[in-house]
Image (tube, rainbow, N blue to C red; front, side, top):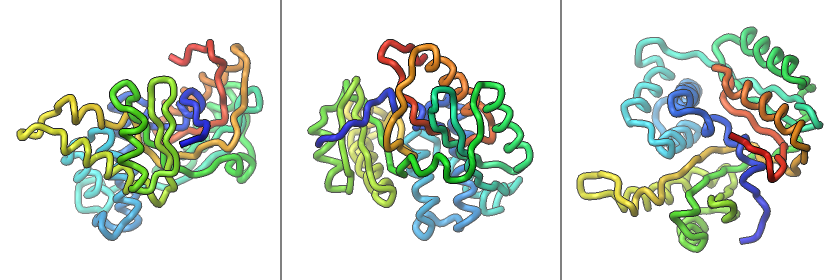
Length: 263
């Protein structure tokens, strides 16, 4: 399938999936909890919770962690969560648009932290709608292009509702409509589960279908190319935002130079 979805331009659009494992699980637990709090603890009747669980499974979160997160959201467990969703829009240096999704139990703290990170790192907050119009909400699933071929992936995901499949820079990126995201991830997960050993242990066949990331993300309609000096400043701002405990995901329009080290 055709389409340009260069890996370097969406690396930061994966939000929590780029965090370290422990921080990733913390963010996923919050996401599951708020979905359960808003729509109940039954994923069959709560599409948002179902999608959050699929995302957690793609990150190899243990089932016990998922159950505790649901209980926390519904109040069935100790310390029931009360989170609010907020979205901040702003700009990094070089005119790079930035969207920040927050799940927090303290609006004042979250607002102050996000504002402080922008101001200390050369960015500035914008008004509501100033940035969000530059993005489209899409499901984005990333697979290992060294273990799978584009044809193998297309055979599995197209019937499940995927819009696009792009193999580039050693990864395969599957793009979906948000409503088809869960079905596509479950189709990939079924291939993974089918490859498990009889004792449900990982095998080379199951490992190759393990998602590197899976999330409903805000994908930029156009990217903003920056030079090396600006790239370093933009990356610092994005990293600082992602490190904040209240920040759930960060998306941007940045397109890093080919010779920029993103590590």
